[in-house]
Amino acid sequence: MQHVFDLIPTIAESESTVLITGESGTGKGLIAHAIHNQSPRADNPFITVNCGAIPDTLLESELFGYKAGAFTDAKSDRQGLFGAAGEGTILLDEIGDTSLAFQIKLLRVLEEGEYTPLGSTSPVHTNARIITATNRDLQDMADRQEFRRDLFYRINVLPLHMPPLRERKKDIPLLLKFFLKREADIL
Image 1 (cartoon, rainbow, N blue to C red):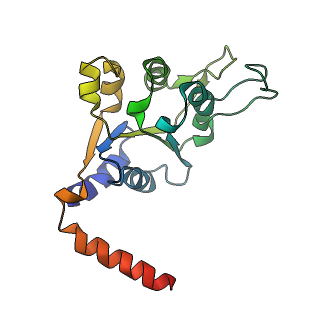
Image 2 (image 1 turned 45 degrees about the horizontal axis):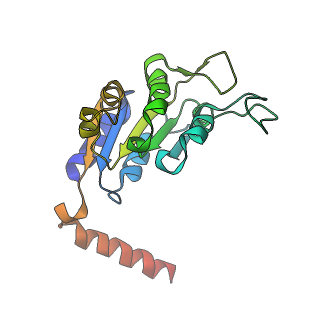
């Protein structure tokens, strides 16, 4: 973990896309937040999107927004999360759970720095930094054509692997001490 902590300041200064991998519960989201907090974007929003929990049809409108009339009940324009992130950071958690169709749209954001809200014909520029996270083996998925290889290479610019706790047993006493102190402070 010390190696991961040592990399965070360097990664934070970069504008490159980050791919954080590791099993569920290893703290991928915490590391993404730490990268944001140490970056020049720290005063801007940090937005987390759990891509695995949102169906693709909703994910697109959540991320890119939509124009009035784009679909039933779209009575007014709605800014998406990329727009809300502004100059900040957006964490696309569980990126390995997105469909190939959605991945094409995300690839455009990474390549062109723009997206098109649903129901619009005009692209919108984004300057949000993208951090992705997954517990899946994207290289293997790309080899099996279950994940776009071009997207994998775009998000794997700065790879960071979070080891599970069973591989860092020396951290257990530190974690135990932290949680005991936190619980004692609450009582």
